[in-house]
Image 1 (tube, one colour):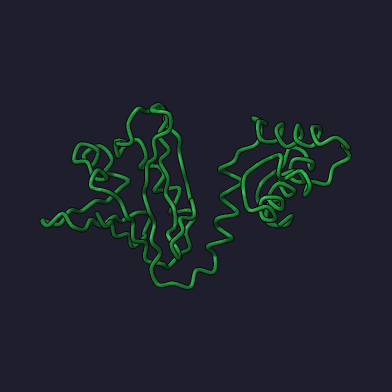
Image 2 (cartoon, rainbow, N blue to C red):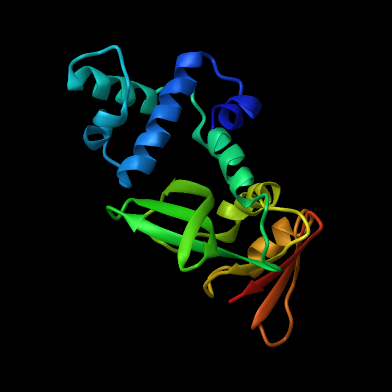
Length: 195
């Protein structure tokens, strides 16, 4: 993991990488996200549990760390040896506190959703305009394995004629008359959108 995380991401300080690795190991050992429950798995010079927790909290709130850049190398490595013919990618939104909307593209595999890219928007509805998240499709295309047919699962709000008019240059969207399936030609990928 040290080689995987340390290779493609330039770390400002080696301690950042070490803390990240400790947190990943603690997460794997414990199986849940909780800083206080991770403390037994964190080797640290600090004797007090509170000093270990402060170290983890400082890492999580460090503005110099780019979570998306860190996660990109992890998800690419996880999907590098994809054996299936088809990769199912789910587009989902979740609303939190009636104020924030999480837009997530995730690989669906064995009943689980493994996030590929995500974005949090300050938005009071789970219905998001296509132009607000079409860049996520490009980001996902750069993270997914080559040569795999990608089926994008989305709800009926995915397609917008107005956004197609503005965004059709980088995006190829063709709608059949039935509107049951839409095909995206995204960076040379064979995408099929199932709505």
